[in-house]
Length: 312
Image: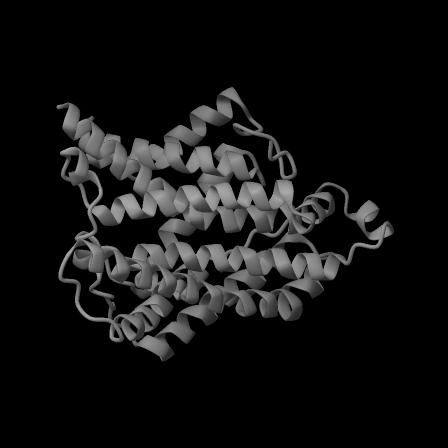
């Protein structure tokens, strides 16, 4: 019983931290730019397809693991491939912001929704053109599970999930450090809190907004890359569910709150997995995050945490 509860909790943490990597990009973009990016889910899917090509190339350069040490080397290569796939989305995000999004900042919200929905459709066609309509799989999942993790303490659990949990936690810690401790991060926070004042003291809002949109695209792609090296394939419709759940997460956490997105993503992930594995209510798996959101909004209409800029 205890082992099952631990396993389902770890499954929830794994799922929640995948969602956090996606939602963090969305909450950064929304918190600073005020843009609800409907194409964010397709940036996640594009990262998943890119990692199929990049990791496939990189793993072809190294030998098959023959033991724990070589399995660790293989996992490092796969993680570097995932980062490379996400890095491809940095110039993609910067280009989208500079060419398509920047001209409509002062327009009504409906223009933003129409534009980002059009980008969503364009990305789907790009992925069809690049990888076809059939799902693709990196086939590295079983090899990643050869990395020794929980079996060292006498507990059998997929090492891939542990790797994702660790990577997701590092991503959150890095984001907090970046926005709280670095000059660039403080400039972004200042721009989010008071755009006019930042402009008055010489901050280039154009460059700041481009950086923020590119970062959002990077973390969406990294989330897709980490999901795609797992047991499931990359497929064209995979961006829809994470997009919807990302909206749920940023509403629960507080619109634009990075810390709120982290806590909300873990809550959504764990409750979703407990609903199926612990409470044995699989028919409520899809509804559970929305029920949680309704309860949180009834108790705290502004979400669990504050708005963007209130990282600490």
